[in-house]
Amino acid sequence: MSTVTRVAFLHTGAVVIPPVMELAGKLLPDATTINYLDDRIVADLGDAERAASVPDRVADLVQAAQSAGADVVMLTCSSISGLAATAAERVGIPVLRIDEAMADQAVQSGERIAVLATLPTTCAPTVALLQERAALAGVERDITSEVIDGAFAAVSGGDRGTHDRLVAAAIERVAPNTDVVVLAQASMASAADAVEVDVPVLTSLEPGIQRLRDRLAAEG
Image 1 (cartoon, rainbow, N blue to C red):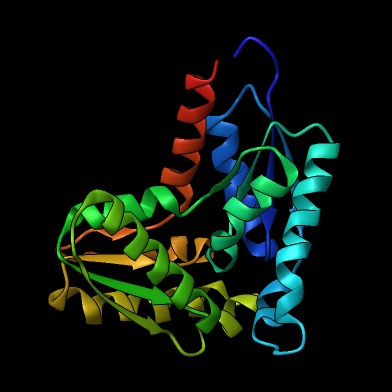
Image 2 (image 1 turned 90 degrees about the vertical axis):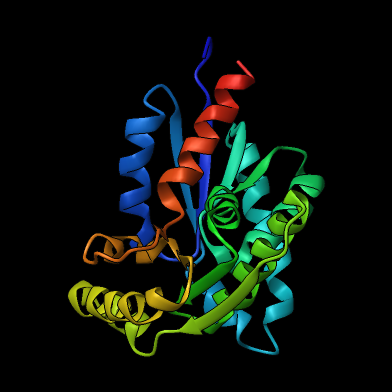
């Protein structure tokens, strides 16, 4: 890149910031990164009175990123990835979804896709994204989804070990009956290293930031 690119990451949980920054440092070494966090979005999505506020809040954070000089924004939470297009249209800068590249990989990996999540608010958006990417690819896919009880509470309380054990057990249970396992949340990525199964287990962080890197390179 001939000039320094400023990339903003928009998060809904602090737990994902360190791994995102680690990957950004490796894959985007010449970029300046900036983080924005609203750690109530996921909870508010499950609140009938507050859910309607989320699209404006996401757009406001994207606007703040633009005001800070960001050239591109990446949403790191699957629960809000469906808001990327509208936020980009409102603010006028690219807004990317960290889970889009993972979804494309999943669609190409087989007919049966099992989605695992630790939050109910993540399942529907991830399934919708997979359906969207399958339609764009001109294929039909059998998509199932499951929320892993107790895993989100564990990681939110700082117990990464219990979270990873619960997620790993779910992966091992569903893997024999599917062609590919999709971990819906970026915060689940650490659990993928703890299992050995005969099907791909896909996570969003690395492919998402790789796609961001490739896009920036293509745009010069």
